[in-house]
Length: 243
Ligand code: SF4
Image (cartoon, rainbow, N blue to C red; front, side):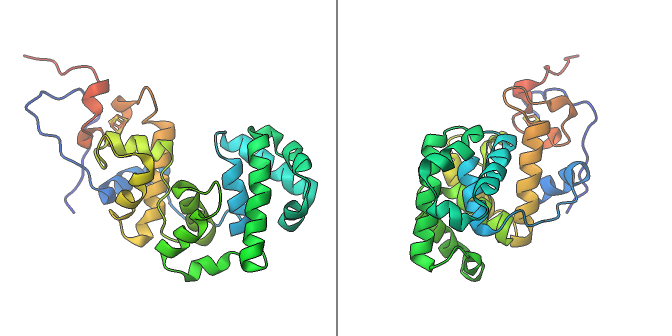
């Protein structure tokens, strides 16, 4: 791979200047010093991760974490949640928002898993081909491509690329995906750009960059180490000085 260099204070390019496109591998390498090391650490048991992803829909990480901890404090186990009263579940997760939708969904999903498997142990998914494991999870209500990828990647260490709003936005700005590609379709496209062992670093690099630098609506292009290879930076930077 050629040596990658980033100018210190980027300005918008002249229209004639071609923009070098960065590969996924170059992006991981450039963002590694700031956001790495990208070491995978299992967050939750897979069934817990299923519940956590439902709680994290349309709310902040902080609120979903609080809601999850309150739920577990209240019931003690997911098996008890599955047997629990929906109103009591809703009260426990209220801090996460949309409790009237999330509480019945959590109960239903847990009972569906129990019906299918006889228990809440989802570690068998790690033995399945990635595509089949995704499909199995996506049959559960409220589990879309992002949630399925989060569960498989974060809990089971599988090479599933999760595309949230940050990953989607940064990928579009960097030209990794086309401007009309939606987040659902971006999962397979971005996942195919990297080797399985690079999926987690790629996800963490992009999501962290989106949170810290490539923000919506005002990205900090002047301090972005990817600016020299970003086709979108000229939309946000001051124009280049002409002689
Ligand atoms: S140059 Fe700007 S738009 Fe491009 S990745 Fe960096 S912060 Fe985002």
